[in-house]
Length: 103
Image 1 (cartoon, rainbow, N blue to C red):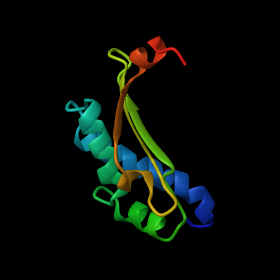
Image 2: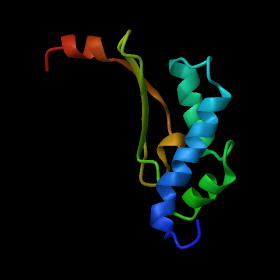
Image 3: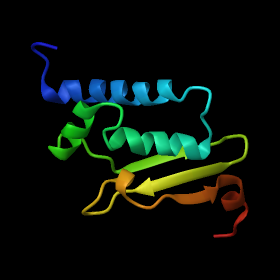
């Protein structure tokens, strides 16, 4: 990656880290397992370089989400001022039930 700036390398390293995490669990992906995989990726369990980028502030995680279109279930986590999304609580919703609600 000689001659490539850090800003150009960041998305590529993010893609590599996520690809490694998904590949390792291919065939076992469901709503909860996929969110766990994402959180593990961001904790550096699949690619330490990506984890270091986050610790250096080169890459941040404002939100993480996984959805099952069949059931409408989704899990969502947001960052706060002092924590990335992967460090915060995961919230569970059903998209179809939310659509039925009156605002």
